[in-house]
Length: 71
Image 1 (tube, one colour):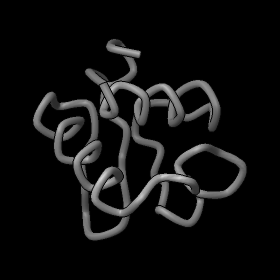
Image 2 (tube, one colour):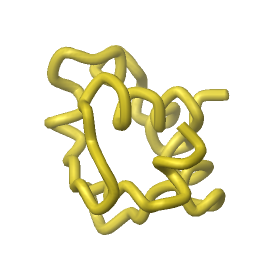
Image 3 (tube, one colour):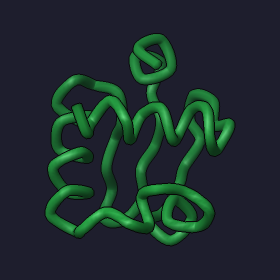
């Protein structure tokens, strides 16, 4: 699932921990997110947020405790 892949990129590729914030620009640098189309990115964000893995505030994503545990 694309939402889980987004979570893996944030936790493993970007080495984020609970409370870490990333923008789309930071995610796109040196990761496959830069190759995704915007609808795919938005779908992944919505799914991850619905699972409680990420908190979305405009273009900033914040990793939650549940997100780190799910990765």
